[in-house]
Image (cartoon, rainbow, N blue to C red):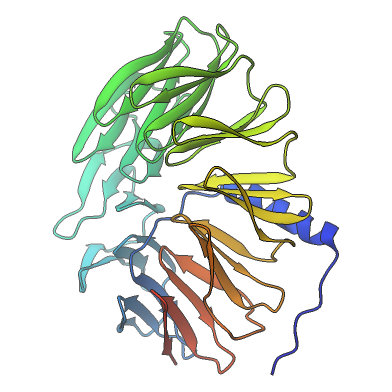
Length: 379
């Protein structure tokens, strides 16, 4: 039996999670896979776990890979870009892409100056000369340098948002899971894109702050000097002052008010959570994770629920679930108000999460894949 890991100081644990929260906020949004996980075996083979079965893909680990729900794209050691979907492997490019990104069901990459979407039969080219681009679930925001336009690609169509000089890249832009906001300083207008419709969100303004999420947008401008919420076509004033900070997810907007209180809009109303700003906090998908008073908390059912009264060394918030290492370094999971054990093995070094699958190395050296309450092992 492995001895429990000794507790470290509360301050050190809190500091580690604060750093983790800050890094997570800066990293690209990770896709939510459904029963799909890439693994590398102890012998070095590249294997795909797909809904309870293992499939060998290559004898060597890939140079790069991204996962998007039920598919993945990877770069072989020879530099080829391949797509795996529905049990089939498709060759996309003979050379490695300069950039490879994914979110939701979307995988985008650059080949030379061109921006493409990874699709099984033939990659779809969005533009021949791309500047900056952002991938978020169902949306791809990109700057087409050829015609100097900013575009959003959604459900097979590209929508031009604004014209730009050739010397500029994408201006201030915020992209949520299915919303996008672009601020055109020359026109003094912030434009909102949602489900194929482009409309002004704020006009006659010189500055705007935005948090874009799923079907909602939190924003403040220099005219109203308040916190406003766009929710499926309706604009509501939530606070009379500009918030100190805000983050949006799927169906929720968390923020530190102008007066310093921590609040969350969800389910059609504002929930007062703390009378002060927490040590750290992060919105990811439909989950709000908070560090306060040395404890790890999650917003659930209108209030902050304590997950653990310490700060885990490793945690991942994804797809509405929080996966973490407990004090014994066993893998735990919190979702919808319930805790569950992913593994009873102690001493786990670290784990990876791909949507509803969790991958880690067991004490016998085998690679464990947890999916829907069952554990699968590959040696």
